[in-house]
Image (cartoon, rainbow, N blue to C red; front, top):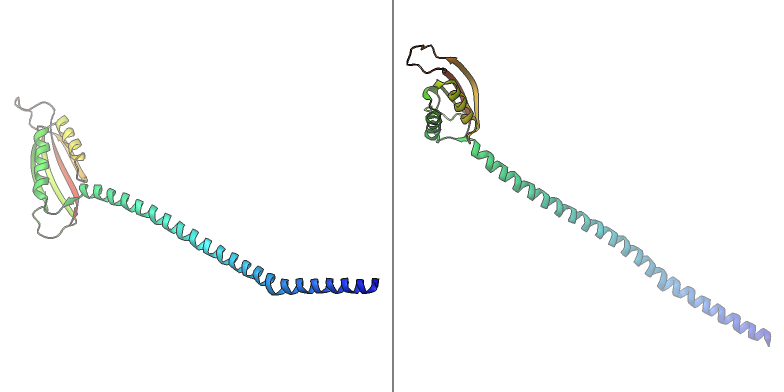
Length: 181
C-alpha cells in the first residue's frame, strides 16, 4: 500500500507541478511581459514629459530675456535721434549754449536735406571762455541723444583788446547723430 500511497502522492505532486507550470506559462509570464512593456512606455513618457518641462522652462527664460531686451531697446530708442525732431535738436544746442554763456553759430548741416538720411551731420562754432566751452561739450555729451563728436578744434580768440574776456576761445565742432527713420 505504501507504493499506492507513494504513487498517489507522486501523482498529486505532478498534477500540482503541472498546474503551477500552466499557471506560470499562461498567466504570470504574459503579465511580467506586460509589466516590462508598461515600464518601458512609462520611462518613455517620463522622458517626454521631462523634455517638455525643460522646454517650458527654457521658454519662460526666453520670454523673460525678451522682456528685458524690449526694455533695453526702449531705453536705447530714446537715445536715437528721430527724423522730424530737427527743431528740438537746434533748440537743445541753443539752450546748452545759453546755459554755458556761449555764442553758438550753426555753420553747416544736413538738417534741411529732404532726403532720407542715416546720419544727421551738424557743424557749428561756439565762442566763449575756455571753461564755458568745456562745460558746453560736457553738457552736449550728457544729453539723451547719442551724439558723436567727430571733430573739435579749440583755439584762443585772436581779439586781444581791452573788451575781450580773458581766457576767451573759439571752438569748431562737428557732430553726427544716428537717425531712426
